Each structure stands twice: as C-alpha cells, then as structure tokens.
Length: 97
Image (cartoon, rainbow, N blue to C red; front, side, top):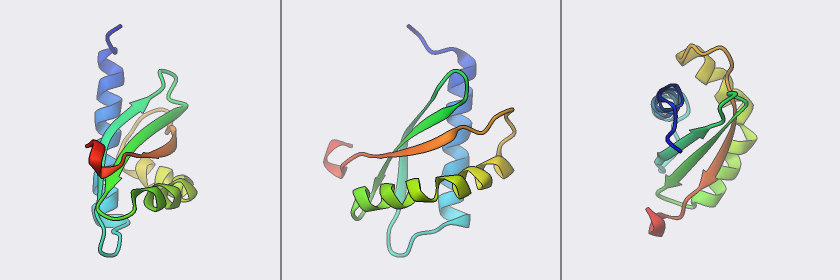
C-alpha cells in the first residue's frame, strides 16, 4: 500500500528539521550523524528515525533516545504540525548503508 502524500511530507519535514538540529543546535564532537529515513505513524504519535554515524552508531542512538524529549522540543520550534511525535532513534550499521 502506498503511503499518503501527507505522511511523506511530514517525514520529509522531520528529516530536514532534525538534520538542521544536529548541525546547528546539537553538534557532536568529532562525529557526524546522517538521517537515513524517518517513518511517522499516521496519527503522529511516534516517529522512527533511522540514523547512521561515523563512530559508534549504537552509542549515538542511545544518547539521542535519552535526549529525545529535548530534541522533540527543538523540533517543535522548527516545524509546525499539530502534534510533535515521540522520537525513537534506530541505529543502522555503516556496513548496511
């Protein structure tokens, strides 16, 4: 089943905003995060954010999941949707990208 246009638009907006957050608001020391994909539930309750990083992607994902509330707050300042989803960061090993 094809994804609705609205869902794709929300996923794209979240991906772009999170990329900006990781560059400007929360830069990591000597590491870089790449957002591979965002999947948001139709009711905007949660978003799975698939990430990869140059160094230790598992640890980076764990740290981001601990800070997901703050990252959601930063996200709400960048995009305007009725409900900011709960973010869940999922690591993708560099070898699979």
